[in-house]
Image 1 (tube, rainbow, N blue to C red):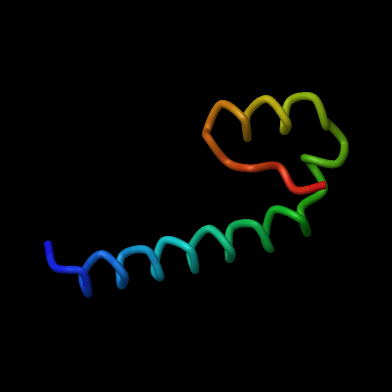
Image 2 (image 1 turned 90 degrees about the vertical axis):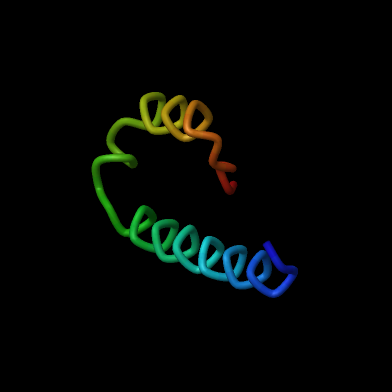
Length: 50
């Protein structure tokens, strides 16, 4: 893969993770069950923002 392809893939991945993060903050289930959401995020490899 070329460097340009790697950069484009990283940009798309960052955009998708950012969009998922914004949608996650607006949802009510993670707020009603913090322990479950915390373990799921860590198990999936996502960083939990304070």
